[in-house]
Image (cartoon, rainbow, N blue to C red; front, side, top):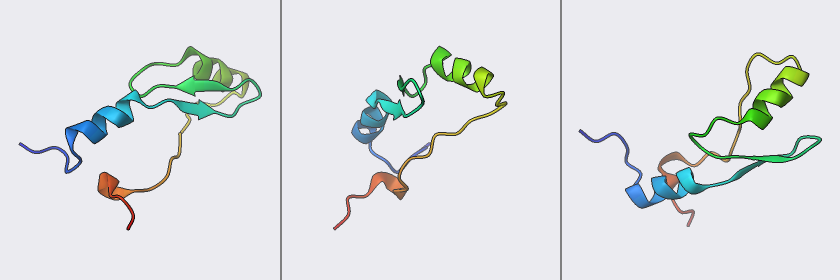
Amino acid sequence: MEYSKIDSETIAAYRAAHYTVLAPEPFVLHPGVVSSRLADLMAREKASCSAFITAWNPFSLIAT
């Protein structure tokens, strides 16, 4: 069964990416890894949820 139209190399690159959170004390998020820094920030801000927004690029197409 096909789960994604994105090739496995691109998915691996996304999983290896480092996403910087520009908070008062910046830190890095890693896909699939729980972040205690994010949990601390959310607790300080009394936030019950959070979202990380990135660029929109369906199917990881290269712009031409």
